[in-house]
Length: 294
Image (tube, rainbow, N blue to C red; front, side):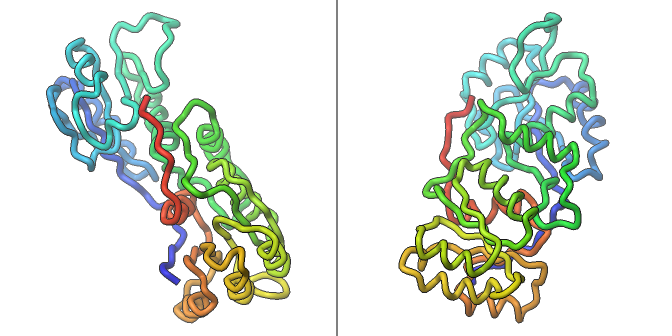
């Protein structure tokens, strides 16, 4: 077994926001707005970037472009600077926007409404940066709150960058909990991955003898045969002997990890599992299919 990932569904993250073209007063105003996010799951740290910058540090997660200067706008929209953040859409703060004017998805008008700006950035981090800790797999509650539903709609909406992964076409999900199976199916659905779902280890072995899977997510504690025994059996099948198997459990003791290693498990995920935990495992085995930045 290569690694263990402990679920932290509410792990905080600070996003570094590059700010281009803002006056000293405008930058100070943005800093005050971002200050209220300090204790949230998502927080934002503004970083000033020169209007004529040739390169943007890869530590910058996204860029806000203040477009009061047309020369700045032309320079940055022409993608002349280099940097990881330039592969994603820019957030634009526009002046003199006409009422009812059609704007890009990540555009906000001056004067800036603080709540609207933070809501836009939250949407950006879900859709473009794939940060969505609100969605839990195997948590205490199986209810989907409004934030979760809104985030899922953003992730599933058309027109955004592809979430597909190379080589990830079909997955097997094994769990005796219907709620957990549905939650993992949602995650794979966001990757356009076909899913077979079963509720027992015995059914998983039967499925693995008939179908070659690209990855298998399997619960450890189930009625009848447990996940360890099923993992060992699946690793002996001709079709899935090399398939990554991710064991799902609420226990993370050294003894449990040793059992997983002996069974041939590739990764160990501890419930509750966040969207980002799920993504980190998928990204380990399957690279993202890149699309051109808009």
